[in-house]
Image (cartoon, rainbow, N blue to C red; front, side):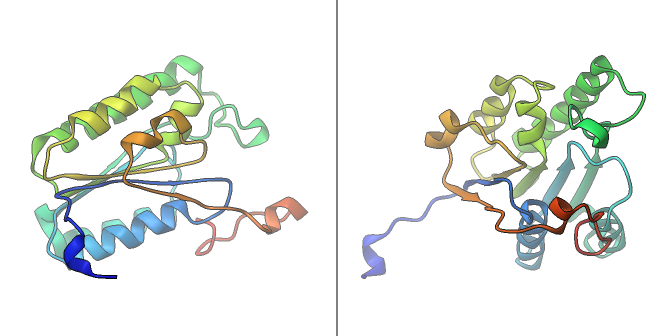
Length: 189
């Protein structure tokens, strides 16, 4: 392999999807790598409203990175997830929260202010029809030329794969939740 035959892209669109664990964790790792490289990062959360470890971590490092790190937590919790669904939240409220979170993501991805914008759990919001797929496509096509974009969550729309540079499918081999064990803090959230 001769690297002189390869070209460099200015920015990328990445997807972490699949039924397996690790999509958000991978995006947090990407955020750490980017911040460590001096980039500015926006982390936009679409579903998780409850307190999770990554939110605490982001709040702890915000003072270190100041204006280089922007965190926005939107969404109203799980939707159409059986017993795990958010209680007492209507479909209209879920859609409104998804739209507000999308608007924040769109502002960040088009501004040119951020080198990386992570839209965590956006795939779920699109799959659950809280956001139209066209809005996800809009983020991809209207992003600032210098801004890389990372989209996470289950069920990424396969017809959008031609617009993506890197896609990783997290495949579950085994998870203790299937054996009726609750999620563990520090591991699962």
